Amino acid sequence: MAFRQIINKVLTRLREDTITSDWTGDINDSSDVDDYQKLIGELVNQSKHLVENAWDWGVLRTVETVATSSGTVSYTMSNLDYKSRIMQVLDDTNDSELKHISDKDFYRFTYIGDSQTGQPMYYRLKNNEISFWPTPDAAYNIRVHAVQPQDDLTTATETMTVPEHPVVLGAYSMAIAERGEDGGTMTDLASSMFSNALSDAISQDENRTVNETTWYAD
Image (cartoon, rainbow, N blue to C red):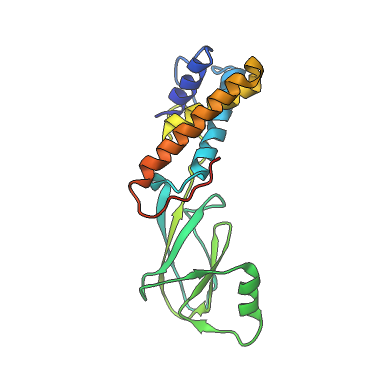
């Protein structure tokens, strides 16, 4: 569903005027969208973040390939960023899985004792950079299985990747809270609707996976 359509679903629930046509460029630069509609757009993106972070959605999963070279420790993963959640790191060349280690352990392995090179066994993450230990001694194809949340929606026709229903209800709940309607009664109801919709959407997505039922929504 397109960004404008999602905003309008929230505006309709709030009994506010909807956006009648697509705007050009970034929503915040548009003179055709009023300030309240822009606020709802911001709340839609905030709700989208909550939904994206609540579960490792199948539609957000991707595999990044990192090709190592002899003597190089760290590599930039061009399609991942600070929002990414790494699920697995696999050495496709040697059919093995690498283990994630802390900065403390990585620096201890790297700087205490003799420098080691060889087949990577461990990895360390920093934003969209991945580092290996031992230092690769050859070319290895490393597959990084990750969840990559979508960037903020800004243009009218951009489509959202995660299920839109919980996003709409989450933005509606935030808008009700922002307006302070009914002494909190409507806020509680809207929040409950959001939680239920999110739980249902996760359950549906979880049916496509196996043993991945841990999630973090309240």
